[in-house]
Amino acid sequence: MITLELLTWYNKEKRALPWRETTNPYSIWISEIMLQQTRVDQAINYYIRFMDHFPEPETLAKASEDQILKLWQGLGYYSRARNIHKAAKKIMSEFDGQFPDTFQLLKTLPGIGEYTAGAIASIAFNEPVPAVDGNVQRVISRLFGVTEPVNTTKGSSIIKGIAEDIMDKDEPGEFNQALMELGALICKPQSPGCNHCPMQNECYAYRKSLVTELPYKVKRTTSRSRFFHYLVFLDPENKKSYFRKRDNKNDIWYHLYEFPLIEADKPLSPDQIRHAFMENKLAFPEGAVLHHFSEKFIHVLSHQRIHTHFFVYHISKLKNNLNDWQIVDYDALHRLPTHSLTTRFTGGYNF
Ligand code: SF4
Image 1: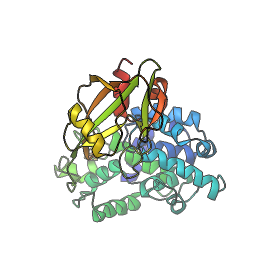
Image 2: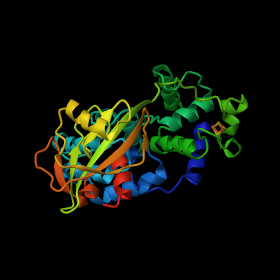
Image 3: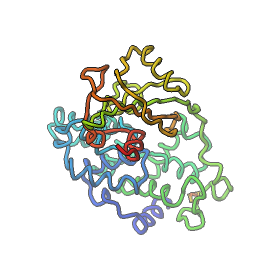
Protein backbone atom coordinates (compact mmCIF):
# COMPACT_ATOMS: atom_id res chain seq x y z
CA MET A 1 0.00 0.00 0.00
CA ILE A 2 2.69 2.46 1.05
CA THR A 3 4.73 1.62 -2.03
CA LEU A 4 1.86 2.05 -4.45
CA GLU A 5 0.76 5.37 -2.98
CA LEU A 6 4.32 6.62 -2.97
CA LEU A 7 4.93 5.71 -6.61
CA THR A 8 1.60 7.16 -7.73
CA TRP A 9 2.42 10.42 -5.98
CA TYR A 10 5.96 10.46 -7.43
CA ASN A 11 4.78 9.94 -11.00
CA LYS A 12 2.47 12.91 -10.67
CA GLU A 13 4.57 15.32 -8.64
CA LYS A 14 8.25 14.67 -9.37
CA ARG A 15 10.35 17.62 -10.46
CA ALA A 16 11.70 17.67 -14.01
CA LEU A 17 15.46 17.54 -13.50
CA PRO A 18 18.10 17.05 -16.20
CA TRP A 19 19.47 13.83 -14.67
CA ARG A 20 15.98 12.34 -14.55
CA GLU A 21 15.79 12.37 -18.34
CA THR A 22 18.29 9.54 -18.61
CA THR A 23 19.26 6.19 -17.17
CA ASN A 24 22.87 6.64 -18.22
CA PRO A 25 24.94 5.56 -15.17
CA TYR A 26 27.59 8.22 -15.80
CA SER A 27 25.03 11.06 -15.71
CA ILE A 28 23.36 9.64 -12.62
CA TRP A 29 26.70 9.26 -10.89
CA ILE A 30 27.75 12.88 -11.53
CA SER A 31 24.38 14.20 -10.38
CA GLU A 32 24.36 12.06 -7.23
CA ILE A 33 27.84 13.16 -6.22
CA MET A 34 27.00 16.82 -6.84
CA LEU A 35 23.79 16.55 -4.86
CA GLN A 36 25.59 15.35 -1.75
CA GLN A 37 25.86 18.49 0.41
CA THR A 38 24.42 20.69 -2.37
CA ARG A 39 20.89 21.97 -3.04
CA VAL A 40 19.19 20.87 -6.27
CA ASP A 41 18.73 24.43 -7.59
CA GLN A 42 22.42 25.16 -7.01
CA ALA A 43 23.58 21.86 -8.54
CA ILE A 44 21.66 22.12 -11.83
CA ASN A 45 23.91 24.66 -13.54
CA TYR A 46 27.06 22.94 -12.28
CA TYR A 47 25.74 19.63 -13.61
CA ILE A 48 24.95 21.03 -17.07
CA ARG A 49 28.34 22.73 -17.33
CA PHE A 50 30.18 19.64 -16.10
CA MET A 51 28.38 17.34 -18.56
CA ASP A 52 29.14 19.75 -21.41
CA HIS A 53 32.84 19.58 -20.64
CA PHE A 54 33.02 15.93 -19.69
CA PRO A 55 30.18 13.99 -21.36
CA GLU A 56 31.60 10.54 -20.56
CA PRO A 57 34.24 8.88 -18.35
CA GLU A 58 36.91 9.07 -21.05
CA THR A 59 37.00 12.88 -21.32
CA LEU A 60 36.86 13.16 -17.55
CA ALA A 61 39.74 10.72 -17.08
CA LYS A 62 41.88 12.69 -19.56
CA ALA A 63 41.18 16.10 -17.98
CA SER A 64 43.64 17.75 -15.60
CA GLU A 65 42.75 17.99 -11.92
CA ASP A 66 42.89 21.80 -12.19
CA GLN A 67 40.23 21.77 -14.94
CA ILE A 68 37.93 19.61 -12.85
CA LEU A 69 38.42 21.62 -9.67
CA LYS A 70 37.76 24.83 -11.59
CA LEU A 71 34.38 23.52 -12.78
CA TRP A 72 33.64 22.40 -9.23
CA GLN A 73 34.62 25.74 -7.73
CA GLY A 74 31.91 27.01 -5.38
CA LEU A 75 30.30 23.61 -4.76
CA GLY A 76 32.61 22.87 -1.82
CA TYR A 77 33.64 19.46 -0.48
CA TYR A 78 36.33 19.24 -3.13
CA SER A 79 37.32 15.68 -2.30
CA ARG A 80 34.18 14.74 -4.25
CA ALA A 81 35.66 16.22 -7.43
CA ARG A 82 39.06 14.59 -6.88
CA ASN A 83 37.39 11.22 -6.30
CA ILE A 84 35.29 11.58 -9.45
CA HIS A 85 38.52 12.10 -11.36
CA LYS A 86 40.16 9.04 -9.80
CA ALA A 87 37.06 6.93 -10.43
CA ALA A 88 36.91 7.95 -14.11
CA LYS A 89 40.55 6.90 -14.50
CA LYS A 90 39.76 3.56 -12.86
CA ILE A 91 36.78 3.00 -15.17
CA MET A 92 39.08 3.52 -18.15
CA SER A 93 41.97 1.42 -16.87
CA GLU A 94 40.21 -1.42 -15.04
CA PHE A 95 36.75 -1.60 -16.61
CA ASP A 96 37.75 -0.94 -20.20
CA GLY A 97 35.70 2.27 -20.29
CA GLN A 98 32.45 0.46 -19.35
CA PHE A 99 30.62 1.74 -16.32
CA PRO A 100 30.51 -0.97 -13.58
CA ASP A 101 26.97 -2.32 -13.56
CA THR A 102 26.38 -3.87 -10.14
CA PHE A 103 26.07 -2.46 -6.63
CA GLN A 104 29.15 -4.39 -5.47
CA LEU A 105 31.35 -3.29 -8.39
CA LEU A 106 30.22 0.31 -8.10
CA LYS A 107 31.41 0.38 -4.50
CA THR A 108 34.95 -0.36 -5.66
CA LEU A 109 35.17 3.09 -7.27
CA PRO A 110 36.72 5.97 -5.27
CA GLY A 111 34.10 8.18 -3.60
CA ILE A 112 31.22 5.76 -4.16
CA GLY A 113 29.72 4.47 -0.92
CA GLU A 114 26.56 2.52 -0.09
CA TYR A 115 24.18 5.35 -0.91
CA THR A 116 25.64 6.35 -4.29
CA ALA A 117 26.15 2.74 -5.37
CA GLY A 118 22.51 2.03 -4.45
CA ALA A 119 21.27 5.04 -6.38
CA ILE A 120 23.24 4.22 -9.56
CA ALA A 121 22.56 0.46 -9.41
CA SER A 122 18.82 0.92 -8.91
CA ILE A 123 18.23 3.84 -11.31
CA ALA A 124 20.58 2.84 -14.14
CA PHE A 125 20.61 -0.97 -13.84
CA ASN A 126 17.29 -1.73 -12.10
CA GLU A 127 19.05 -3.61 -9.31
CA PRO A 128 16.74 -3.86 -6.25
CA VAL A 129 19.02 -2.23 -3.68
CA PRO A 130 18.09 0.69 -1.40
CA ALA A 131 19.64 4.15 -1.61
CA VAL A 132 19.40 5.69 1.84
CA ASP A 133 20.34 9.35 2.11
CA GLY A 134 19.30 11.90 4.75
CA ASN A 135 15.90 12.42 3.12
CA VAL A 136 15.14 8.71 3.09
CA GLN A 137 16.29 8.31 6.70
CA ARG A 138 13.92 11.05 7.79
CA VAL A 139 10.92 9.77 5.80
CA ILE A 140 11.30 6.16 6.97
CA SER A 141 12.00 7.13 10.54
CA ARG A 142 8.75 9.14 10.64
CA LEU A 143 6.61 6.76 8.59
CA PHE A 144 7.55 3.70 10.65
CA GLY A 145 8.34 5.35 13.98
CA VAL A 146 12.02 4.36 14.11
CA THR A 147 13.28 5.67 17.46
CA GLU A 148 16.87 4.45 17.13
CA PRO A 149 19.12 7.46 16.24
CA VAL A 150 19.48 7.38 12.44
CA ASN A 151 23.14 8.41 12.51
CA THR A 152 24.24 5.28 14.40
CA THR A 153 25.12 1.92 12.84
CA LYS A 154 22.09 0.29 14.43
CA GLY A 155 19.70 3.06 13.36
CA SER A 156 20.92 3.14 9.78
CA SER A 157 20.73 -0.63 9.50
CA ILE A 158 17.08 -0.60 10.70
CA ILE A 159 16.24 2.09 8.13
CA LYS A 160 18.00 0.16 5.38
CA GLY A 161 16.11 -3.04 6.31
CA ILE A 162 12.76 -1.24 6.08
CA ALA A 163 13.72 0.34 2.74
CA GLU A 164 14.52 -3.15 1.41
CA ASP A 165 11.26 -4.60 2.71
CA ILE A 166 8.95 -2.00 1.23
CA MET A 167 10.83 -1.57 -2.07
CA ASP A 168 9.01 -2.19 -5.34
CA LYS A 169 11.37 -4.82 -6.78
CA ASP A 170 10.14 -4.14 -10.33
CA GLU A 171 10.88 -0.44 -10.15
CA PRO A 172 13.66 0.00 -7.58
CA GLY A 173 15.04 3.17 -9.19
CA GLU A 174 11.65 4.88 -9.25
CA PHE A 175 10.96 3.73 -5.71
CA ASN A 176 14.26 5.06 -4.32
CA GLN A 177 13.79 8.38 -6.09
CA ALA A 178 10.19 8.61 -4.84
CA LEU A 179 11.32 8.27 -1.21
CA MET A 180 14.01 10.92 -1.71
CA GLU A 181 11.58 13.25 -3.47
CA LEU A 182 9.01 12.94 -0.71
CA GLY A 183 11.73 13.90 1.78
CA ALA A 184 12.86 16.82 -0.36
CA LEU A 185 9.42 18.24 -1.22
CA ILE A 186 7.04 17.33 1.61
CA CYS A 187 8.55 15.46 4.53
CA LYS A 188 11.09 18.24 5.13
CA PRO A 189 13.23 18.52 8.26
CA GLN A 190 11.34 21.60 9.49
CA SER A 191 7.62 22.19 8.97
CA PRO A 192 6.81 19.09 6.91
CA GLY A 193 3.66 19.35 4.79
CA CYS A 194 1.73 16.56 6.53
CA ASN A 195 -1.58 18.05 5.47
CA HIS A 196 -0.93 17.37 1.80
CA CYS A 197 1.27 14.28 2.25
CA PRO A 198 0.13 11.16 0.37
CA MET A 199 1.38 9.00 3.28
CA GLN A 200 -0.51 10.75 6.04
CA ASN A 201 -2.85 7.83 6.77
CA GLU A 202 0.01 5.39 7.12
CA CYS A 203 2.40 7.65 9.00
CA TYR A 204 3.34 6.65 12.55
CA ALA A 205 4.84 10.02 13.46
CA TYR A 206 1.75 11.86 12.26
CA ARG A 207 -0.66 9.63 14.19
CA LYS A 208 1.40 9.84 17.38
CA SER A 209 2.26 13.55 17.07
CA LEU A 210 5.97 12.75 16.84
CA VAL A 211 6.67 14.56 13.58
CA THR A 212 8.85 17.23 15.15
CA GLU A 213 10.69 14.65 17.31
CA LEU A 214 11.73 12.25 14.56
CA PRO A 215 14.25 11.35 13.31
CA TYR A 216 16.38 11.08 16.47
CA LYS A 217 20.06 11.86 16.04
CA VAL A 218 23.14 11.55 18.24
CA LYS A 219 24.84 14.93 18.61
CA ARG A 220 28.25 15.05 16.94
CA THR A 221 31.36 17.11 17.72
CA THR A 222 31.27 20.87 17.96
CA SER A 223 32.86 23.30 15.57
CA ARG A 224 36.43 24.62 16.04
CA SER A 225 37.71 28.08 15.19
CA ARG A 226 40.70 28.66 12.90
CA PHE A 227 42.41 31.98 12.13
CA PHE A 228 43.70 32.44 8.58
CA HIS A 229 45.90 35.34 7.49
CA TYR A 230 46.34 35.54 3.73
CA LEU A 231 49.29 37.51 2.40
CA VAL A 232 48.46 39.07 -0.94
CA PHE A 233 51.78 40.23 -2.40
CA LEU A 234 51.04 42.33 -5.48
CA ASP A 235 53.41 43.72 -8.06
CA PRO A 236 50.95 46.31 -9.53
CA GLU A 237 53.26 47.38 -12.36
CA ASN A 238 53.63 43.90 -13.83
CA LYS A 239 50.21 42.75 -12.57
CA LYS A 240 51.61 39.72 -10.81
CA SER A 241 51.11 38.04 -7.48
CA TYR A 242 52.14 34.97 -5.52
CA PHE A 243 49.82 31.96 -5.38
CA ARG A 244 50.28 28.54 -3.83
CA LYS A 245 48.58 25.18 -4.11
CA ARG A 246 47.27 23.69 -0.86
CA ASP A 247 49.21 20.53 -0.23
CA ASN A 248 47.88 18.90 2.94
CA LYS A 249 45.79 15.89 1.96
CA ASN A 250 44.19 15.74 5.38
CA ASP A 251 43.00 19.32 5.46
CA ILE A 252 40.24 21.19 3.67
CA TRP A 253 40.63 22.43 0.07
CA TYR A 254 43.43 20.06 -0.92
CA HIS A 255 44.98 21.08 -4.27
CA LEU A 256 43.06 24.35 -4.57
CA TYR A 257 45.04 27.55 -5.08
CA GLU A 258 45.23 30.43 -2.63
CA PHE A 259 47.46 33.29 -1.49
CA PRO A 260 50.32 32.50 0.90
CA LEU A 261 48.80 31.67 4.25
CA ILE A 262 49.75 32.01 7.89
CA GLU A 263 47.42 30.12 10.19
CA ALA A 264 47.39 30.84 13.92
CA ASP A 265 45.27 30.08 16.96
CA LYS A 266 44.27 33.76 17.27
CA PRO A 267 44.12 36.87 15.06
CA LEU A 268 47.59 38.33 14.33
CA SER A 269 48.73 41.92 13.75
CA PRO A 270 51.00 42.78 10.78
CA ASP A 271 54.05 42.67 13.10
CA GLN A 272 53.05 39.30 14.44
CA ILE A 273 52.60 38.07 10.87
CA ARG A 274 56.23 38.91 10.08
CA HIS A 275 57.27 37.08 13.22
CA ALA A 276 55.14 34.07 12.22
CA PHE A 277 57.01 33.93 8.90
CA MET A 278 60.24 33.30 10.81
CA GLU A 279 58.60 30.72 13.06
CA ASN A 280 57.27 28.90 9.99
CA LYS A 281 60.72 29.09 8.34
CA LEU A 282 59.34 31.16 5.48
CA ALA A 283 61.13 34.08 3.84
CA PHE A 284 59.21 37.37 3.95
CA PRO A 285 59.50 39.10 0.53
CA GLU A 286 62.02 41.95 0.66
CA GLY A 287 60.64 45.44 0.07
CA ALA A 288 56.99 44.47 0.62
CA VAL A 289 54.95 47.41 1.97
CA LEU A 290 51.58 46.92 3.65
CA HIS A 291 48.97 48.61 1.47
CA HIS A 292 45.60 47.33 2.68
CA PHE A 293 44.19 45.29 5.52
CA SER A 294 40.84 43.66 4.74
CA GLU A 295 37.72 43.43 6.85
CA LYS A 296 37.18 40.08 8.56
CA PHE A 297 35.74 37.30 6.42
CA ILE A 298 34.09 34.43 8.25
CA HIS A 299 33.67 31.14 6.48
CA VAL A 300 31.62 28.41 8.11
CA LEU A 301 32.12 24.75 7.27
CA SER A 302 30.44 21.76 8.91
CA HIS A 303 33.00 21.44 11.72
CA GLN A 304 35.04 24.61 11.45
CA ARG A 305 34.64 28.35 11.56
CA ILE A 306 37.40 30.16 9.71
CA HIS A 307 38.17 33.77 10.66
CA THR A 308 40.14 35.40 7.88
CA HIS A 309 41.93 38.62 7.06
CA PHE A 310 43.71 39.45 3.82
CA PHE A 311 46.87 41.59 4.11
CA VAL A 312 47.68 43.25 0.79
CA TYR A 313 51.33 44.22 0.27
CA HIS A 314 52.76 46.08 -2.70
CA ILE A 315 56.17 45.11 -3.96
CA SER A 316 58.16 46.29 -6.97
CA LYS A 317 59.33 42.87 -8.16
CA LEU A 318 58.43 39.36 -7.09
CA LYS A 319 61.34 37.03 -6.62
CA ASN A 320 61.28 33.57 -8.23
CA ASN A 321 61.49 30.43 -6.11
CA LEU A 322 60.47 32.13 -2.89
CA ASN A 323 59.13 29.56 -0.43
CA ASP A 324 56.83 27.16 -2.31
CA TRP A 325 54.96 29.96 -4.10
CA GLN A 326 54.27 30.43 -7.78
CA ILE A 327 54.30 33.82 -9.52
CA VAL A 328 51.05 34.23 -11.45
CA ASP A 329 49.35 36.95 -13.52
CA TYR A 330 46.34 38.68 -12.02
CA ASP A 331 44.23 36.79 -14.61
CA ALA A 332 45.27 33.48 -13.09
CA LEU A 333 43.74 34.48 -9.76
CA HIS A 334 40.38 34.01 -11.50
CA ARG A 335 41.37 31.23 -13.90
CA LEU A 336 42.84 28.72 -11.44
CA PRO A 337 40.63 26.65 -9.12
CA THR A 338 40.31 28.43 -5.79
CA HIS A 339 38.15 28.08 -2.70
CA SER A 340 35.36 30.47 -1.87
CA LEU A 341 37.36 32.54 0.63
CA THR A 342 39.81 33.48 -2.11
CA THR A 343 36.99 34.09 -4.57
CA ARG A 344 35.18 36.35 -2.12
CA PHE A 345 38.31 38.46 -1.73
CA THR A 346 39.40 38.57 -5.41
CA GLY A 347 35.80 39.25 -6.50
CA GLY A 348 35.61 42.37 -4.36
CA TYR A 349 39.15 43.77 -4.48
CA ASN A 350 40.13 46.42 -7.00
CA PHE A 351 43.44 45.06 -8.34
S1 SF4 B 1 2.64 12.63 7.19
FE1 SF4 B 1 4.14 14.19 7.68
S2 SF4 B 1 5.72 13.15 8.83
FE2 SF4 B 1 4.51 11.57 7.84
S3 SF4 B 1 5.58 11.14 5.97
FE3 SF4 B 1 4.05 12.68 5.49
S4 SF4 B 1 5.12 14.65 5.74
FE4 SF4 B 1 6.37 13.07 6.72
